Image 1: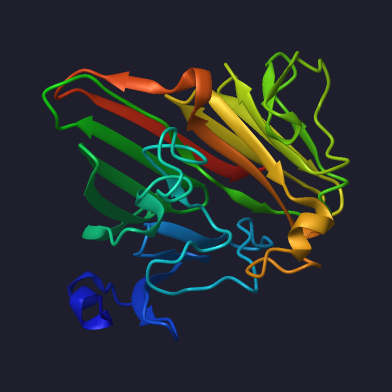
Image 2: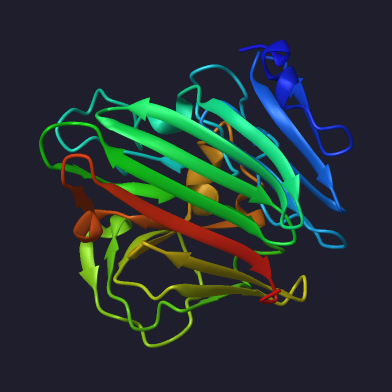
Length: 290
């Protein structure tokens, strides 16, 4: 990929393109007071900041922006499996979509904001991904089964949310959902009946979750609202300091600055599509319900 390939999608005063030091191309958005970034490898949002607000998306200051490397932070697109491959440990963690070079089909501006339409053919599926940078961040991922047999997949939008202090935030909306605790040998946990507060390393898959979650951040005096459709799972993750120190692309001191609250269909909620059928998952991220 080179910046020249994307010149036709440049929109004066709204969308421009640049190349990272290691050769990845990113789209840079500045429109109606909203700023954002989208890396074409993995179709990965790495920044979104509404007018007058602090950044909402966390990308590690130690992240590596290089061909074939996963980018630490932002919103990786996880597909067609979550975590290790179920039968082949040599295959990449979290599937192939997050490090693949996506096709940018169209970029446009409208009242809702700046819209990017992207596509990728992978592992028996055609993926279509729409990203809208506006006062809210809208994400729509559609997967179509291109094979002649039913096909099963897992998917997630692995969102890293920027927060003032992960130990102070409270996540609401998961109170009635059971979970799988990946830090405790995949133990099944019953619903907690209370807002979630993180006090230690957390890597939990919540099943059968409602369509609206909120992240209350008293340090920054705001709530992040996550609304979704076509997604039955939510994954909450933070490595805590010991594991963070071992992750060179995160950095020992940066674990406090984010919490992952991911929209998806994983584990018991994995999806199966008939030949030619399409499944669509959406996420709308906003501040204070705006």
